[in-house]
Length: 418
Image (cartoon, one colour):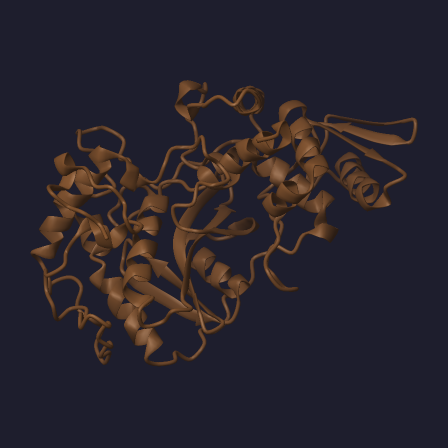
């Protein structure tokens, strides 16, 4: 892997690999922690932390994020560490981005950095030093850079800057950063839900409920095995498990179904930004949001943007809250862009063991959990299975992990996943 590709992989680890924090389960447990990105201590330590990450990537070495100790409590969502940089670069390269896919497939800053090493290099310089340099010969970059700098020097409502000057046709700024809620896209009311179309809506909702992840939430899967400890199952783990479950059970009926993970972030007035991840199902040109914690299905919606707005409505529970940036979607369990990040939950024996133990408890409580919604008669799968009818038969960790995943005999007994 080239040095530039390794550098891109390093920042990808933050944008996606660690982009999801602990979601707030419906049990009164603490929600995701934010991050004060205006704190001088946080700014300095974030640059030092990112410098270590980039250095490890350049050397082809592994990097343990927990090896670095921040003075202040680190955010659960490490994406928050680079949110100011993402906001500035979204504005700087606005003409090259289409994050909501209005012109076709969504194309965000991460995609652009993967395709253009010069953008990745400029981003790296900014997150490590605070410096941005543009040339007046490239008005597509010079213009947005100058506009942000002038706004910071005049009104100072949306941006702040430490220093800015012209040098030989180049505009150089230091510590240009967004203020307020870092909003790229203003919040808008959630559009009406599209009229459901049977039988897919019924099948989807039935299998979401039958996943038993609501039961596993109620039984504390997200908590630590040790009292007072930090739980290891957070919102991206729940999202991955639900996505694999749905793909296992619905692809036989609907071969074109897609299930990805949606990450989104927001900020409430006077609070630090937070983020969350949840599965998003795409079928027949429609988008459905799935909440693994509650077993709820939301949608269908006509676009990713509408689904994103609904996700914000569900979790941005404050008056005057503002969405941050634009939504990010990625395949469940995918770590191809950030190979040095921790692997998905099913790669760890202790997490397999906790999952299997709590799953067994929940399987014994069907039909208290997992029955289809009223008025919904789901189709039988090709093997004859019907959710909520077959009871605990087939309750297996294999339904929540990719095919041929190795399961430790110490965790779940003698299990072999096809």
